[in-house]
Length: 470
Image 1: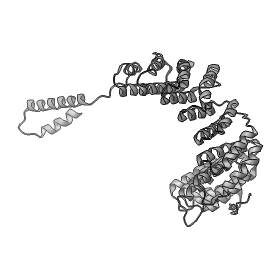
Image 2: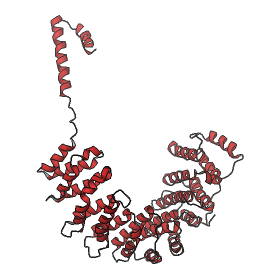
Image 3: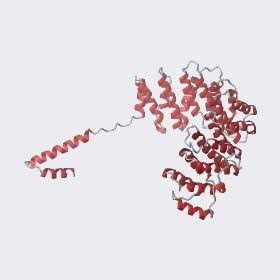
Image 4: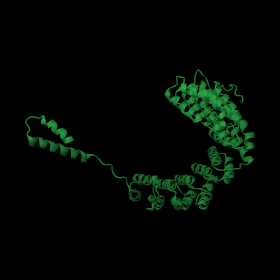
């Protein structure tokens, strides 16, 4: 086709005979071939063997490290058959600290990505324990090992016993060692106790909470929170709960630690811990009795914690908080918006909690819906309103059906506002989730459906603005 088109053009040229025209055509063809040949071709990706060769033999540490880290993306069983893990273990003994760290971290990544036979972990588990415990080793090496162990030791996997031995002899021992001067290493090991997920080690974390260093105590609180999220039937002693409450009450304790402790206590309250409910809930409520002079991070943490508690008693102060931080004349105040958005997200947590617990409390569900409807009706901050609309999706369970009517009408009303189509599409998504009906952003069709479903219009009542429980 290309040649035919060129020939037509040549027919219009004067003074060229047939041979001249043929020569020009031939030259154009050669030029075309030449251009095609000059097009760069992407090089074939390096094989595992090639990358392993660079890692072993290159004299350039930058090339070595890059080659080693590239093997951290291995996901196929067969790709580690070429003694990759054995080679990386040898490289972890290199004289170059950056090669060593890269090798240690890559072995951990391979173990996470390729779990067949626990090949990587079987090779590194014992020598890594020795590295972790050795005070002669560079702190970065020991911390890298601790992080690998935190992500790959599994007390419930096929290597349960050797993993537990490595954990007790390595991670736990370093975590409890007050004489360990490498704080980063200790905090990594302390957090690793939580990730290991064995309830029996809650006592060790409670001991660490009694230490004076705020960073160490924060790591212990974070580990307890992680452990509570992952383990079942965790029993926390009364003295430990009292210690947590003491830390929460102490205004001299740094804010990040108080926030970590508050999150732990809110989980305990949700799970029915009597001591936490009696001692900690009033403290959280006191923080939730917000005035704007308080630290915003503490305010946000208290809002989040009340959402985790998820009870009717938690909803009322959150409603009050929203009212304190809502000024219709300044809806986009940068200090107020995050708090109001956090309130909306906390209502989501309330709905999730009530859906998951054995004995649902419809007072909590009703209160959460009233707060969310109030936000949707009156808050013109796009961020806050969007969070409230999304949170209402969690009203979908049939057992919450008694509150569907109020929420659905409030959402339908949003479709006749001047909101842009993006916001209206979010409304439509939430409506579809709750009702299992799809009328898009068509307000009239939704109103027709509503009247057929519920009969006469039912107004969505605004929640009490005094913050009293519904």
